[in-house]
Image (cartoon, rainbow, N blue to C red; front, side, top):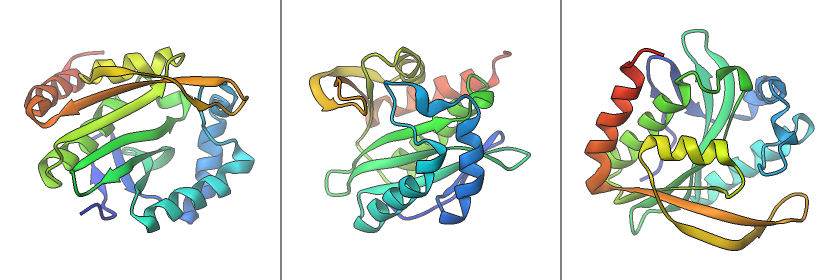
Length: 195
């Protein structure tokens, strides 16, 4: 069901993650020093090799489908995203482990990337729900998820330990299949409206 695929839009392409992407992803993550945000788990440049290996290993096990994110039309690698916690039996997936270089944040790239991922999940893979999770303190991520049209299902208190040892409260959002037509219209409208 969840097999490597390339998803292409007008401003972004999502391509299957490859070990060959490591040098360009190291450059991308340095744009904004994203790994220094305490409430995220973005890999530092020297941890990129291990992160790519981890994601590819999870792909082998069938629980993750990782992508590298390319901005269009220049084809520059600007981040990573995944389908994760794949449940093929119940047709449920999470979109997460996403990060983008600072220079492409708030440009519309994320909106189109999420539109591509959601369309593939609902239209091609017949998912019944797509989930998003983020740290309670990651206000930018929460706003971006809510802007997509996802609804807050709840907050898992003391759900995980963060990299610095603090406890993470995890906000769980979802879009269900019956909401997808409205969410799709909304995302298309967001992409077309003037900035």
